[in-house]
Figure (tube, one colour):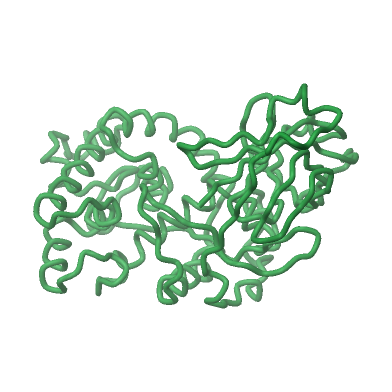
Length: 368
């Protein structure tokens, strides 16, 4: 299937008072860990970034995603499929009904034979692949079938291989597995399109879900309209060492510390054992009347933290960087796998009207 689009930079800045380079957070796809500690995988990701970022219209893609994602997510849930598969249509078509040079059609870029096998019509002027409901239903059935066939034939449950089969076709992926004697997508010798296909999906997922981590490395807000000529290619210098995993540990509140507002504060360093998250109480400090992309935001902590071996006492202030995305301001506080959320709705980022002094927020920290 035809693929195009997109990628992002996986270079992260890890900061707290003193800024220093660390490494990328743990990257997952459909529950499978991406081996970014492998230099080949890391360099491939960076190669995609350098080639495709200037060609991506992120503001338009984000608008389309807001429209299509709720619908696609409901179909994925009905079929028991991972939510991450919703990023496939972005890589396939950018949510546009178009026809490829090999006659793949629709937002899922289904081939005629695949569509026919799922009961879709593919006649000129009456092509079900251009119907959102019918094509999404067919794509979900196809993904489920490929996943089941891979598990049955090779004894492995892999949505990564399933995605590769969606691009290349199951028969050809099965042949690669048999001849190369590996079920590891990242070590397979594949045609160029399929070899990069899953990397592109992963890049899209990261960019949509954790954009605040990457903005400063682009040097501009990728979700605002900026011409490709303005992109500083020098910002994409690659160092494999930046991709080693880093642990972020936050000590749960031991109940020994008190402060003037904690008894009334809804967030008390709660630990979600099932999701492996810690929720840390904080507030916005300072005034931001003329806030602009890339401006600093001050966040005062109301719990003690231990981050990467360093102790940060409650009452200290973190200096983050804010970016406008979907009428909210997402804030990069420099920590790997730490996101800033508004207290009243629990969503990532802060409404512009709530970016003000003493605004309660919380940090959601993933524990690896």
